[in-house]
Amino acid sequence: MCPSAASLPAVLPFINEIDGWENAGGSAFVDHAEAIISVANECLLIALKLEPKPAYVWANLASACYMIGDHPFILSLLLSLTVLFFIALQTPHHRKTTAQQPDTITSKSGGGLSIRPGYSSYDEYIQRQLNKTLNPKLRKIWTTRDWERKVRVFAQFFESLKRRNLLFNDSKALSIGARVGQEVSALKSIGVNDSIGIDLVPYPPLVVKGDFHAQPFMNDTFDFEFSNVFDHALYPWKFVGEIERTLKPGGVCVIHVALSRRADKYSANDLYSVGPLVELFKDSKVVEVRKVDGFGLDTEVVFRKNKSRNI
Ligand SMILES: C[S@@+](CC[C@H](N)C(=O)[O-])C[C@H]1O[C@@H](n2cnc3c(N)ncnc32)[C@H](O)[C@@H]1O
Image 1 (cartoon, helix red, strand yellow):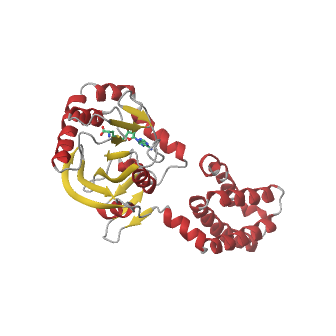
Image 2 (spheres, helix red, strand yellow):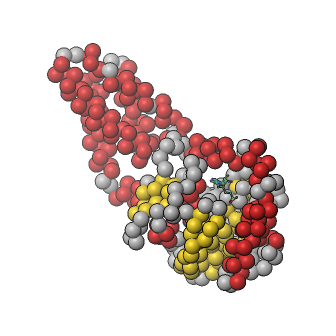
Image 3 (tube, helix red, strand yellow):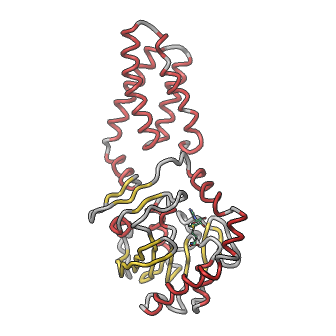
């Protein structure tokens, strides 16, 4: 992993330090210095977000020059690197990278998908998810008081999918972000016996440990995948890419999302219409979109993976 995650905060004190350059010389120098610092500051913040690795190298180089006291040199260094950085932004390679990992995907059909800012690293995102999932009091409630009610509602959804010939007793089924496995239990209760869940925290025998951004399964494994945790994906394109990788050709994926209200503080993205979700599925067709009432989620989107490979 690039140093973005853990080490970026180490870069930031440098920025604060160069903000205090008023004592470095006469007022003309200070004016120029402030202007350059402010441009460099903004560029570095953008760089940290878009290209953390070069930004990190850049900041440390500048920091080293500053420490040896060569202020005019650091100013020209910052200026040239600023220009170089923006030239680099225009290269086809960079355009490709940012297009694959957008902060906001605006759908052709209107509405969007935004990734929530605020995670300085992937570990921080995982830790936030775990804080809730590992909470012992909540786990007690999920496995006792909540259990019957949730299994019953999930079973109704799955029965309905069976009636529509989208799920069968002999389907090999995966539930993504299944927490303590109520949805897996529901699948089994209606006869879909070969069912398993994945979550960051395992709950044997119903749920195995797995990150949905990198599913621990081989290509073309499942006939059916269900998830009501799309909003927890920090990288929605990976979430969907993994579903399409592990679904068999012709397999069905059912996603429950909330469009009419914003999800909770553990969500990592906000979806404003079905369009961006549909566009993430590069090798599938939409079978159906319908309103549902599923634990705060209001829309069910059903996809079928193409029989012949499209990607
Ligand atoms: C809102 S809960 C939903 C749980 C369950 N589907 C239900 O309806 O009861 C979100 C779940 O997604 C899991 N989760 C979050 N990020 C994940 C990731 N990257 N990989 C796998 N599971 C994740 C959390 O641990 C949590 O159990």
